[in-house]
Length: 453
Ligand SMILES: Cc1ncc(COP(=O)(O)O)c(C=O)c1O
Image 1 (cartoon, rainbow, N blue to C red):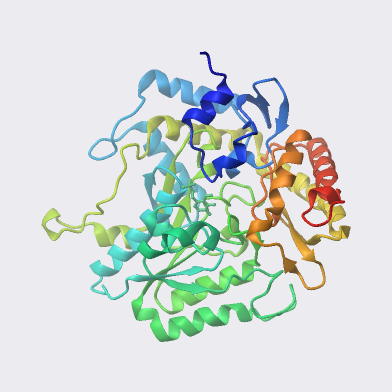
Image 2 (cartoon, rainbow, N blue to C red; image 1 turned 90 degrees about the horizontal axis):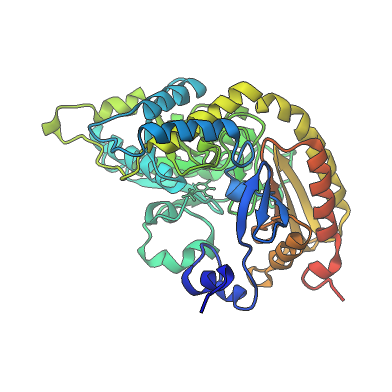
């Protein structure tokens, strides 16, 4: 019997972050091809990729420049290990990344994805302190609602119970600080009218325990998977100052925010700081192929540079570390940045997007509208006054996701946050269309738990 694609999907595939039973009687969207900012399903229906295919697509899909870089590379070299051998795309990409970021970031370590980019930073930090004779510095600080990946190490520093609680028994312990989310300020202050009291728990912890702490890892300005929570650059600047003062590393996870999405090349540039480790992935290859990169400084690198017998090698690597095709895609994406200047263009697009998002604030169940560059989120609430949250099991996003598909949008709310995470290549006209369609979905009480008739 010939099975359809849908039937084969159900029979053979197990999808990530998906309750497969949701699709027991419902077809998954099978994407056939992509063009620019649009995805097309097997029946030729068009969808705007409003979440940039899990936050990685920058210049639209299949950008011709990037395709050319990858196809040219495919003619020469598909894969070679990066231990003991090297290759031009990895070398040139490392050079470009160092030039793109600020001094003193000077060395690039490649890996496979965002989780590994963060995992590498954690391991480097830990080993660095051992090499300094400070092996007691072996614990980490992270934020509630933070997300750094799905490996055991990064989950140990994750603060999203919905994702991590099942694995708690095997995760290592760390120090967790309140999320500096302004809409739900942990210090009960109002947005824009506070003294950054939310930094106090960090300083208190560092005063007491800095000799046990290797590093503080956080996502700059935006806790994405934790619910699109946003916080001001001043918090980040304060965290960087305290990290320096108490001699711990600052690890910035720019896996999601890197490469222009926030309006600057990197989100940490809003705070005018430089981390000890910068973790990159997703937009690194313009979203075309999987790759991670961890940047650090000479001080860290030099602590590992020793005679072999001293056993200071950084023993970490993946089969596809620095894969030539992925590196070529990344070089292609950086070429698009140079040729088309998306960072200049979005300076006009961003205010237009933010303006359009204001219409959502009037809705009874929209508690907060927040935007950072090409990313905008609506936090849906049961009660606007009390800011009462929908619970995890309300699945407030599910209906919105399904209705979005009907309107040709791929919306994929994170818990109570409905968001747009737009490619840099999105035009003002497209923004008008997307925000209008999203409004139709979110404004319809039938799509909101407990509001429909
Ligand atoms: C901030 C952040 N860090 C790390 C990761 C993990 O990246 P990956 O899914 O490529 O392992 C993600 C993924 O969404 C992320 O948003």
